[in-house]
Image 1 (spheres, rainbow, N blue to C red):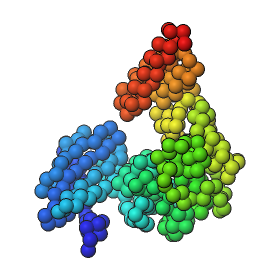
Image 2 (tube, rainbow, N blue to C red; image 1 turned 60 degrees about the horizontal axis):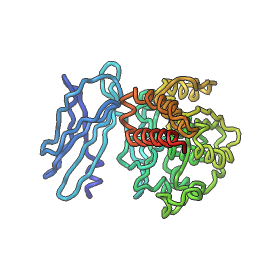
Image 3 (cartoon, helix red, strand yellow; image 1 turned 90 degrees about the vertical axis):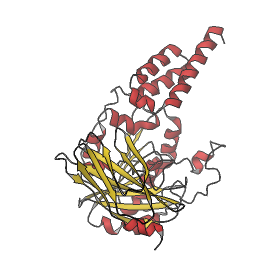
Image 4 (cartoon, rainbow, N blue to C red; image 1 turned 45 degrees about the horizontal axis):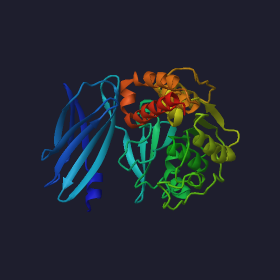
Length: 371
């Protein structure tokens, strides 16, 4: 048995104890272990040790967590993830997970909660087989089954054919209501793979940076050498269910991709425009506490509205860029300062914020010089 097969069969456990979590894994002779605990608020790390168990102090509250187990065996380093939910009664729910498909650059896993609703979710650019699936905690907390579809090595899902996707998931979808869900690259995949499982599509700012539509406009594309294996247009079978798309009408590259790719296949798609939310439109919906209700309404096949006037870190950042392009540094700085008031979200976009601040100052200097 090789190392990967051994680790796949290994038991891993998480237990709530007073003051934190106890993580443990079956012992492997000669191995060393490291442990990460990831929550929505923080990541706690415990580095390599010979102990096959670890206690992590943590202020526990109901929510979704991922325990990451690292194994160092000889010269090999491997990683496995255990996703779990702490319920309102502080019991631990570890969803049953089964691998349905794997190739060098693709992986599909099934989280089965015995629901009649299943979401196929797709990760974004730069993700790997070890990344936490898009929206997993959000959907598990709602009690839905999840088909987690991963890409690796910047392959942009090109090694996951529609045929392989269908053959892998069709059996577990029998008698289920299917939904596909993702943002950016994941949103592109939500539309691309939906037809073969007749799924309702929920996609946000759908875009595949390796697609020829985008390569034509970007000569320095990081995916210039990647072989594009998908069909360049969404083709039959098309889903007969509804297609919901959320987009910022001021984010031009997303608008073009929606128009030339999504709308061409699904001209009757339900399009929701959220001005100045940027490529992070789904994060805007979550930040303004609208996303959960929207997903619930879609699952129930009920109508809903989006309040686009709610202020958010993302729209403040979008308005900063908007006024910068127009040439008004005072208004641009005003919205940048508003965005910076959200220290937690701002800390995740340090480079983008620094560039905006630099561009505002540059514009000010030009205006002062009368250029």
